[in-house]
Length: 468
Ligand SMILES: Cc1cc2nc3c(=O)[nH]c(=O)nc-3n(C[C@H](O)[C@H](O)[C@H](O)COP(=O)(O)OP(=O)(O)OC[C@H]3O[C@@H](n4cnc5c(N)ncnc54)[C@H](O)[C@@H]3O)c2cc1C
Image (cartoon, rainbow, N blue to C red; front, top):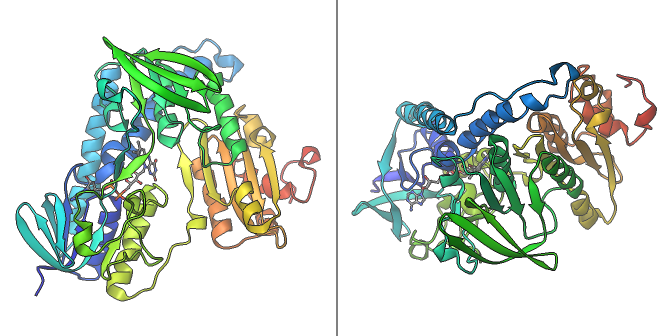
């Protein structure tokens, strides 16, 4: 008989969702976690600390730059960078306690084991020198920052997201390599703290996987705030002299040298799969090392499932949890559950925020060889005019024949909140008429989604408020 019904390797979002489901089903389970503390990436070095520090940065940066004439002489509050890091540490510790440690206590039949797990066969892992056996497994080991092998990188002290939010001193200047969600969030956070920030991106647009109009508008806003951004950069070498970091790059055909107090690398992630003994368990990985799963989250080895960042689909806390829960339901209930990845929303918590769900214009063209899209500027939304918050746009992509909403892409204040109406539309196949027919609260930024729907049937530039 096995030691456990279910061993979960990893202790982040995917693992906790799986353990919660397993506990509901009365499955005898062990979570084995090592590396990051309990809770994994999100609570310790990801979503929560970054969103906290971004909010601190906003409160520091925007008051002296008020949109309102009546507040023109606003001044910045006094800023203590070390105190911000300290407060962040306390918050992380408290959330780790309430969202993970306390939760563990409430999960019956779930053991938590600290230690590195490694498969020694299909049915067993080695942890702290002990062999543990189980009927079924979930691999939820997440990812770590990927450090690209730039020439000279071995001789340079660099930061990843993990160290950047633990600095003792606020740098005067920082080079950020990578204009994905993490590079831009951390870049704007430091910009708002007062650091001179230069962002370098390899491909021709920031947020490479996002709808280009949205990315361009965000770039415009970030540059207006003082961020220096260079896209289409080929980094040639990096080096350090004293405390100064240097970077040489080909920027659209011109070789340029950049220098700063700190170098932050935000160039993607690598899966935590190398030392897992996957070959002993018959678990296949793809060319980048991410675990291959079928639509039921099961790996190439029957009874071994995988979920979260380690399967490399979209790097999101909510999706990791969903996958963990679906995998467990499939493993122990034969539920046959699958996930519709087209209706998973994602956000970038810059200011303004970016949020997106479903197909982009380019993806629609690929699937249907036709496109039906409308873009509405945030400046057209009555609420935006009232509060003078007019940065951004909303782009809607609909089915070329039946008008069902297939994708919505937003750059706007509170975009991460606004995206949920669009998510329901995409998930449940609502048409633009369903959205237009739905009365929205006036005045709200959410009316922007309705305006985007209306733009398919009317000239919204000559439309009174609240027209259905
Ligand atoms: C800076 C930053 C900001 C982010 N912001 C957001 C956001 O705002 N919203 C959002 O949805 N997502 C955000 N994310 C992404 C989100 O944090 C991840 O998608 C999510 O945490 C992944 O969860 P997971 O369970 O797959 O992996 P993880 O949380 O990484 O957990 C994996 C755990 O397994 C451990 N482990 C690895 N190997 C072994 C082994 N052999 N044995 C035992 N344990 C092992 C790891 O150390 C870790 O503790 C952000 C990420 C970063 C880095």
